[in-house]
Image (cartoon, rainbow over all chains, first blue to last red; front, side, top):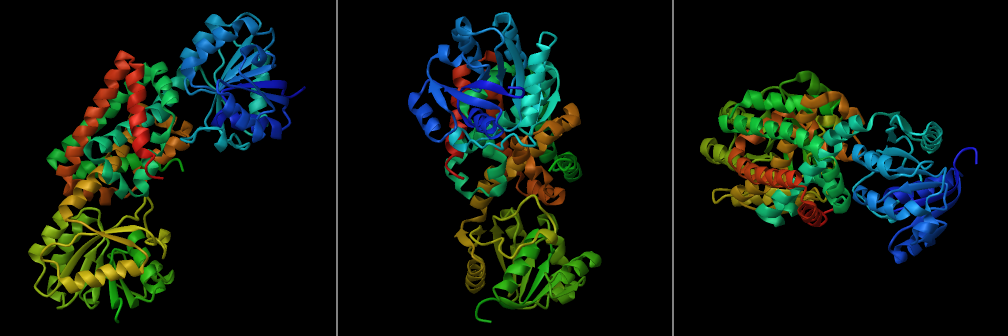
Length: 283
Length: 283
């Protein structure tokens, strides 16, 4: 196929994996989607819903595809590749769709055999929803997709993958994995971490109060419904950047705490205005 | 009027004040809405949009109504009442719609003349949107409205106000002002405070990163667009309860920080699962 890939294996048929499967088929960018997973019952349901064309629980079968998409939590990428390695064929392209890039790329560049090409990609299209039941073929339309090539990335593979995401309607942007991980530590990983702390604060003070929450609380804590496995792995694999952001956050908490103790009306208002001003820059 | 009030003055025609004006007229619970404000131009616009029936910048005129609704930031309630006091007529009912109740009620019970009745109410229907341009007549439909009577609250006034909110479709719940302020410190005031700190962290680390934010960040920080004046006053008037919640939040931040330093995968996952479990209890 000029654009796209004859066969695509999706390893981890969840919200992102399932949406990518639907999108590739809608855009006729593949002839066949193989779903790989450990839970056969779930794969059968995905097949029934028409999200995948066949399924397998064997890595050997999954490795028959021209393109392999890793859409599991990032923490198990290494063990997946180790299990796949003897079945991988030359010219196969592997991409991931995870929220952490540097440590993932380091793993792939270390262990992938020559002639198998890895391209790191991160579609900014996740949500607190999980499972292929929530998959949508238009999930990537107008979504940013960050691609993080390195000097070792195969040029032709990079071009094909860039083209693939663009065909799905995504706005592709390139950056180094290091930069990507700094950006997303700040605008995604830190907010998730804070959000979990906020809900656990309610949990410890008085769980029942949550029933009085309005739409502000609901919006602010929606991401606390995200997958624990996915976020555990992201936190562990981008820990240094997240901890750096966390220090600045803690300083801000101390700042407003002191203003409250001092009842410093003017400074409190300025503090809020500063946040409002930046937040208003996006929708 | 058996239900409702012949004339209602709305002091502060913003999102909540404007929505209440629209709702009262839609349900025919008043014959006339007087908008009070300091900015005549804004009041003219509200009149043009049909949100109010007349406007005034004089407290004397505003005090001609049977019901006076205070819908300004809570910090100026005291000075408003001091300015109104010589014009207030017997049997007038005053309500507020603010997010802090105890210190507001203390003020009213101290300064209101005998025969003028105050009932504290808090519709859980605000949002980061401000201004009467965003007002909607159905804003209170199915919304919780907390009413916080004290032993000094006039029974007949309480009944009329309860009835009024119910007629607007609200689900009225009664609690003490003290309890209200503890509940909302936890599920509204703390989340706003945290959210301002989160956005200011982005502001200090690298403003430009905000352009890479996805829907998770946008949802989580939407409330950072709220009114600085309103939230400054809420923070100052409920400082003790908020500081108490903040201590528990800071402990949670320290907990997850230590888990990250120790790379304690299992504890991190449990921490996230705990948050997810509670957050899933509401929509």
